[in-house]
Image (cartoon, rainbow, N blue to C red; front, side):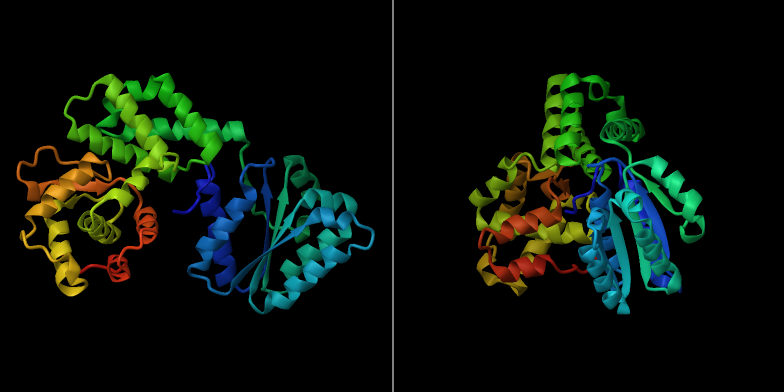
Length: 368
């Protein structure tokens, strides 16, 4: 799973759109990225470039440090610009960290950099700065050289408030969890949310995933106690943030057939969508198909009956979460995976599991 940053999903999307437009366009461009240290500016730029590169294969990213221009001869700084020019057969995103330091020490170098984005179509100059007043002062002096594109990053406390607002919005929009007042006010949950934010850069995506898993558990237990509800919420928040390794360690003790069932679920989840429920029957059919066509050491003499029992055991271990408590027959039960498909595949590969089954699980299944 990608490491998305808390409170800056919107900024990443905005920067990705700018990079994609630059790749498709016929001219260079520039942009100012403004925010305090540790606000995720560099990580967001890198992630935006990675996402844009999925459709823009000849898009290169290079960082240079404006503080290097404090040296009298500027040798290192100029050599990095030179390297960027040599790479300009492809389109280059040149990120200048500490651009506010550069404008104080050598303004002419800043002009030269911005001219790169004007003289051809191969350069996108990103000026990374700490202070908004820098943006205003530079705009007055070099307005003709500077694009109007600006992306602002909030400070840590602002980002935390935004994160908590997102949590409240997700709860309010959920017809099941929105009715459970304890989720909005319990101090344990609020303290854990803050820890998730500070220690692990929790994203909107991870938060949404944790609440989806909690919803599945609430639906399975018709009337959860407040204590049980809070414990479950804390469990899923920790799990989706990678703090709870106990769940993944359980993979080592699983029978081979149960691990193969998980791989069948990974394959099906990748095709249906991460949060779409999957039936027991569908997974058992996939397992029998795998055993007959991929690796016959997994052949099932019980005609699938034992596999249904193993799926129930995976639910008890919280490796999968049954989300259809009304189903009476085993084959009609529906579930979602407790971990991301990427995480499960990665951990199972560490178990020295048969490679042909792992490869098969990575393929797109046929339609139901």
